[in-house]
Image (cartoon, rainbow, N blue to C red; front, side):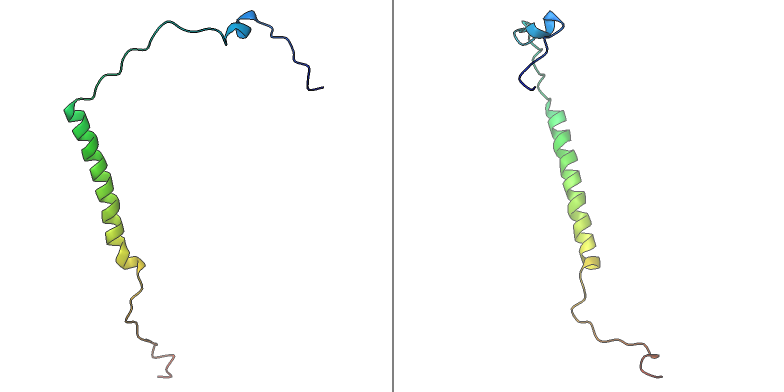
Length: 78
C-alpha cells in the first residue's frame, strides 16, 4: 500500500534535483560607518528604554516592607 509511488507526470520535476544554476548572486555591499553607527544607536536606545521601564516600574511591583496594620475606623467600631 505505501511502497508504491506514482510516476512523476512532468520530466522537469524529476530533473529538478540535478539542476544547478551557474548564475552567482551579486556580492553583498558592505555597510558604511554611518549605517553601523545608526544600528548601534537604535539598539542602544531600545535597550535603554527597556532598562528604564524596568527601573521605573520596580517601585510599583515591590511591596512596602514597613507596612503597618491599618484598619479603617469602621472595623474598629468607631
